Length: 416
Image (cartoon, rainbow, N blue to C red):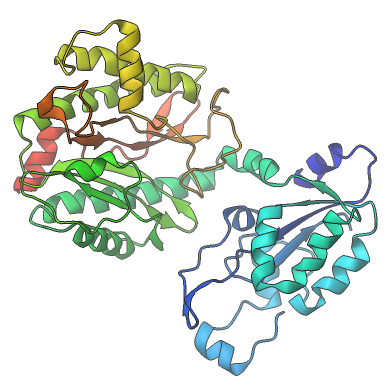
């Protein structure tokens, strides 16, 4: 179906091929490799989790030295690659150029991620010939990523099970954090704790550099330094998830390091927690569901809720309230989730979401110290709550429902 779809977009019906390139192995120093994570599109199509592999889809074993085996481990052999990926033919990488030259005749259409191709050329120079053929007019280029995003958007039953498991591990790891880390006095200690908790429960790694932001640091949306001291009066925002067999969770929770929210912290957290409950109810009951409409619903609920606690220094019109709340939460309330944290980015957020799609629901309120529209006591606080949700035929399944969210439960667990 994937190749057929590419074929239908080819006006003159030339030979059509799709080339997928595995993510190169990269290094932080000459002999220190980065932790390897495969390109999600590549892994989705063929299941191979190794560098220096290329997949050519069309109509029609890399030798290792003893030194390489000793340091890097043995690569999968041809039979293993064929069994995992389901491909018809496996050739040594040394034959790539010869084979491509034999099948890619002038006028052929090649669907390839050009950005990934250019990145790989740095580490695998033999790919330069493909780039030259594209830009010298020998091949007709067709986009690739949008097509694979369409395939990946709705999750299969097997993928849904993997997402349930990665969300379970992520939720349990954050619950463990609430139980055991209230005495931690540096953000980096929590990062290490989360990594350990995810791995000991079976995850491959953390899904992304976690945000562990104490106090005003939480007002930097993608704060990943996570190495500053934590004061006893701070609330800490933790945005973290785990990666299990290429599928990731994405969860955010906030907690007071003292074990008890202050009166001001609790007032604001109650507002956000109530907004999250309303948004989850919206996701479960409103059809058709569109993510942009969900954002609009969040801003409206936030305007009503913040007005009820006299959050702003002066009375505002409804239009002014909406504008201020849009400033308070500058990110979208939702994104697609799956093999990547921000999954299938080419899929629009103004279209109806069908069953099988997984989304996040993540309202946030961020009050920087210089925000003079807000009463003084709320300034410097940043809160976000984030859950992962599978859309179903009958509503929605909250995959992170077991991750503690209500303030009474947070305080109870931290006191135990």
